[in-house]
Length: 334
Image (cartoon, rainbow, N blue to C red; front, side, top):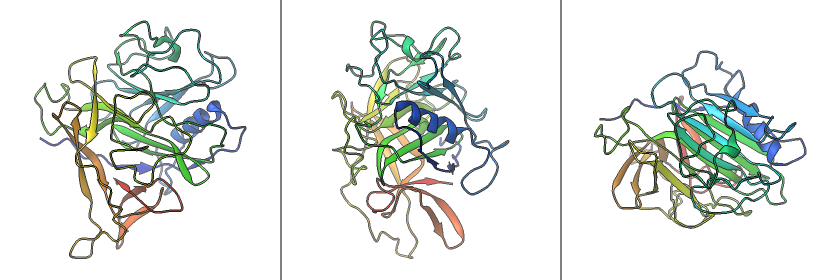
């Protein structure tokens, strides 16, 4: 049984103008996530797609070292939370990662939690420590462990793009015109089943996907199976991530998409001339079926942050590796 359709909305891109550090990036996420209107000028007040974001400026006094995304009170019932964090120097204790690695200064980290408690009262982002397989940055619940989302290196982020829906968010940051930080997190997979071996009690699957820890940016073929891609998890340290909570469990499983494509689809149309939206299917590394991406589709080659229209009808927003060069494209349906 299919879950309710998500409606993806684009927030106004945030230009990064301050001194470029991990703190600046986190502030840009916070600013984007707390705007009063969407990019098309419509208000977010009362919108069932509007997330709220809080930030941590106390764990390391005076700078933002974590931002936490809280979904609107619709849809899922698992109290999910998304956290993005980092600092210019390492915390006192080694962090709990999805895969064993080491802290890298100014590298953004992403994690997802379910049945999550509050943030910043008794715990913070440094509370998820490597010495405990159950530790979390929240006061309760299960946590995925941190994953890499990209690498700033010595370059400067220029623009941050955020898209939100009722149950998931997608965030991309560019260096110049190319994406160098990217993640999608939340309940963005529909298991197409209510069996408790396939889905949580609310019918969802929760997880995240993010690009790897390199300074060269996301690949033009980021919907393929190799390179710096999305939706293709590996068991290799600092490589791309795609992970999901095992339903009913605190453990996570690696996911990847079926039949990764090398095609660009620069002139991709249906026989009637319309631009098609091709569903994505996800499997676990074990080979078991995970589900279908929710209102995210493969479509013809386009650019980051374009709006796709079919005549006078909006179809959605396009995600590419670049804002100036077309290649693999993911469409977030409105």
